[in-house]
Length: 184
Image (cartoon, rainbow, N blue to C red):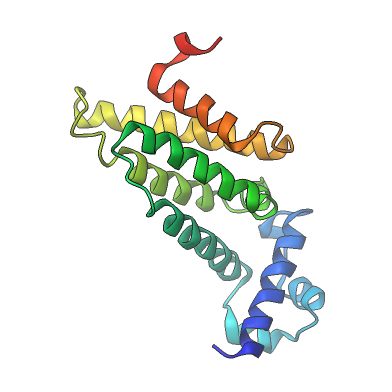
């Protein structure tokens, strides 16, 4: 992709992200995105079919980058799971503006669902064989842990990341592995 196309896509993404800070995706128009990006509608449509298509591109870019970060670790080992959680939180801290916007009420709920599916795949793919629960019970546990973790992370970002990624990783990791009885 040439430099002009990369630039156009970048300003479109930045414009949508700016608009999402103040209003829901369903209320954002192509006209608003184009005005903020200082491009015409035909240029927009040469890259994306709708504001939802543009949002999906932003989400996919974020997820691809996150997955490449996760692929660097082996999550079947206990110490690696803690390190992986810390690395995810470091990644989120580094990209907190994007994360906060994509996890906000103004964005699309599909991003959270995609995040849950990826986290389930990476965190739990090796745990199912060790589990003493049937697959259905395991799925419920999986959903509980992953959705809870996502909302803890969302709250952490919204609160200005008042704890370090390491501290948050330990909180999440200890709760997942040791439950409420370990929290003091």
